[in-house]
Amino acid sequence: MTEQNDFRTVSLDKSGTKLRIIDQNMLPNSVVWLELDEIEQVWQAIRTLAVRGAPAIGVAAAIGLAVSAANIRAKDFAEFYQQFCRMKAYLATARPTAVNLSWALERLKQVVLQNKQYDPLTIKGALLVEAEAIADEDVACCRAIGEAGLPLLAGVRSVLTHCNAGRLAAVQYGTALAPLYLAKEQGQDIRVFVDETRPLLQGARLTAWELNQAGIGVTLLCDNMAAAVMAQGWVDAVIVGADRIAANGDTANKIGTSGLAILADSFGIPLYVAAPGSTIDLACASGSDIVVENRDPSEVTELWFRQPMAPAGIDVFNPAFDVTPAKRISAIITDRGVIKPPFAKNLAAVFGK
Image 1: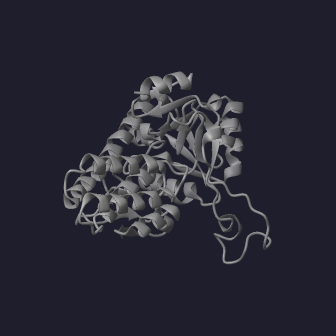
Image 2 (image 1 turned 135 degrees about the vertical axis):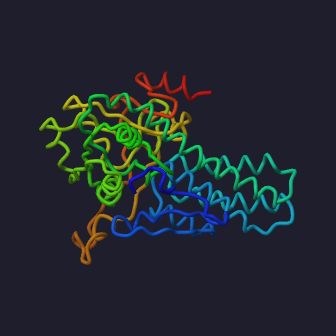
Image 3 (image 1 turned 90 degrees about the vertical axis):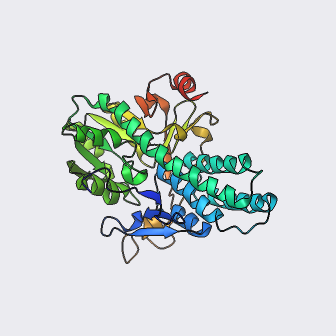
């Protein structure tokens, strides 16, 4: 994977009847593609992180719902709409924190309502068109994020990132890594320190893999090593993605992000959040209103070994995300430009219409 146009992480398959995704649970050892056309399969893929990353989840949900709705057998709009809404509500339960999921599903619902005067077959076609439009928009959006963030990297020698907010978390380019890919295209050599991101190791398995494939210099760190490299003066900036950004700028991202923000603040290093407009939830007043997903304790106690890594029956706290306060964020890089503090005022000005 040396070129950004090699493939789309999430797409409609060539037949136009299935959701096609790269199975991220198999990386970095195997590149496996999944083709799904049933709502239960799509739900499982999102829930088990075969597809993950807020933008990718949104696109996968849109295409997944569209291809699943194509299987609905209904004689009239009322019957079709009832079954469609049941599928939509079910898919929305797969991951509660990433706002892109509900955002994409709601867009498809509006397509159904706007075409209620037509027969179910016509509505099904309109759903597929909208789902593909969402995927195309994501590519353009992430490219725009990269272009907006690139000036922030002028003179930067190295950055640190957490989890995976690259092309695997989107359709192409990604969010936090988009400026790095564009810097690479322009010949700027930036080294990336990548946190492993316990407990699911998205940094080690995914970010390190995709950057290495793209020819970008990577140094992998255990999560508890970030302070050590910052103290050495090796990190010029921290760039992370986001799963939901509240109206005041508080940001939910992969667990461990808030700790990095504290470290970056302590060492005087800017921390940038990169996200599309669909991740900004102006209806969510602050980080305290964000629902944080808690995941299976076995991810912490036994996931990576054939034998348990902790005493049997031990109590486990395993939140998938934490919330970084707006005061620790230097800027939010979006497809509509760089948003700087005060976030409550500036986010509303740009995304409130």
